[in-house]
Length: 179
Image (cartoon, rainbow, N blue to C red; front, top):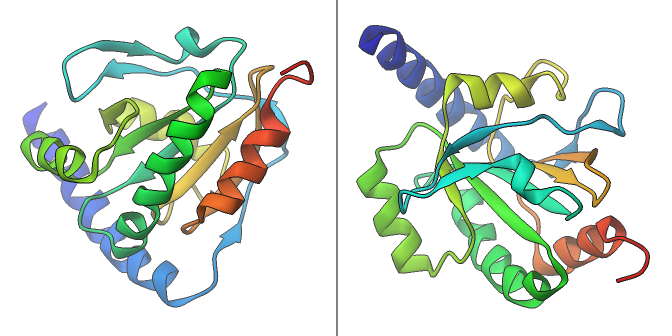
């Protein structure tokens, strides 16, 4: 099992390093398969050791963001995500970070130094596979962001970084109409 995980991690790291460079050099684009559709279910353990399940977000909008601490475009959008989380958490919104090709101590340090105020989970093959089917060709670059509305529908897949104004617009559209 450890060999499979090591191979998976190495493959993801190599692929994401190449793609991260490509994404940061070009303009961000959206690429998805048949949206809206039911958002994938996933579970994990947050970096701070708490169990996490997407089912805990039922009825709330959220954004799942695949990122890496070593990825320049990912690092660029994190401060905007932290600021956005502060504004929208009271309305029931949250980001969920999925750290890919990382070591847990590195992610913990990154979270602390960047004031990350939302749950972060280490990527697993099951989580990656659950989201891969919603992107043409699977997740091929980071950051890759999946937007889920309050009805539990995946409404957008975004490849490349975004800014606070864009996140605010996405979240407004994802909130239940009575909020």
